[in-house]
Length: 67
Ligand SMILES: [Zn+2]
Image 1 (tube, helix red, strand yellow):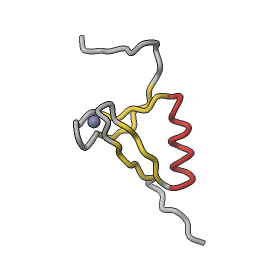
Image 2: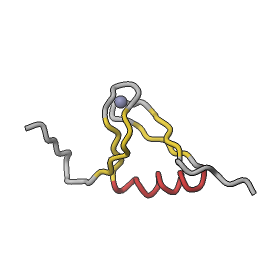
Image 3: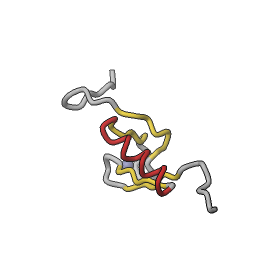
Image 4: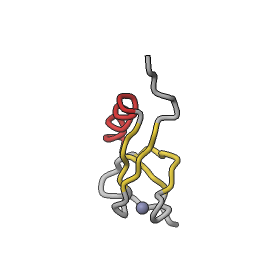
């Protein structure tokens, strides 16, 4: 078995990304995913921090509007 549980049972959201540095799958705690989504909606991008410390920018797949 390789399943791990951190202290508590905080749920995480799979961001379907891999860290560029350590190749770990990127997950965001449910408690933080709203902030990530809000940042994506507002700026079209958000920053995730991998467990290894590597920061990674994710971008919305939608193109920002320029009216
Ligand atoms: Zn990493």
